[in-house]
Length: 319
Image 1 (cartoon, rainbow, N blue to C red):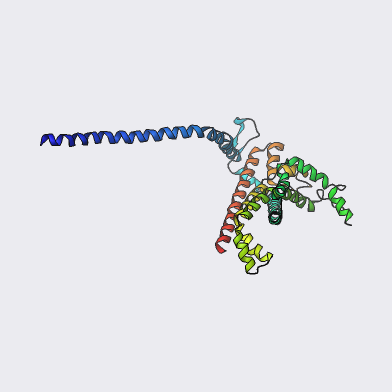
Image 2: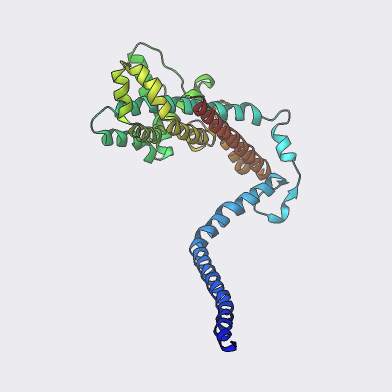
């Protein structure tokens, strides 16, 4: 009887000893996998920390301080004074800077969206679609400085645009010298330059629409306008959302095109937030005000983006 119990006791003892060792082995294997994964991720995480998180934290510190630049010992905390100064009486940040920024972004989105939908729909019905997409994408790979300078000369009183207007019997227009036409003129260039990306996104969205929907609409006798409004546009909602969000963010952050074409002029007709941040930092040496303006612009971008997501999501639910 005793001998019969010995193997069972021994088996239980070995079982109790082997179970923890198996668990420990799996734990060690998971730890080794985690270490290897973090080693592979380390360069990216280091780059992210050095070039994004540290500058972001330093910018937040500067937004709450007064600093003339290049002397870390001269950083004087001022609390929220930089933020309140942006909206104080006599400040031009709220109007016209933020107003111009929002108008610039809205105009860019409206023109780019309307133009890209029209062109993408036409390209979807043409031959050699790859060629057409490439031609419309060329402005994207061209530097902003080159695009801005070319259009600047085209807008001159003796430039191509006024030459066409004169040939049609219209008078010359001071596109970049008149405060009433300067901002719309730059908006038109920004929308034209960003048209290629929007067309690529929308043509890809059009390819994802099943042909059976159009065939069913044709059998029901629906016309082209009805098909466009009832089938194409609703099914393009994800692509339209991507275009709206990206174009709006690009418009709110626009800097290079404006500084090349108008430098914020005439007067303050094209003065935008990014240009004002540049002036505060590099012209006036007020890095605190520039950082505060950057965070205000970030808040505007965040609110606008969330608003667009909410509008498109609500539109999808209503549809």
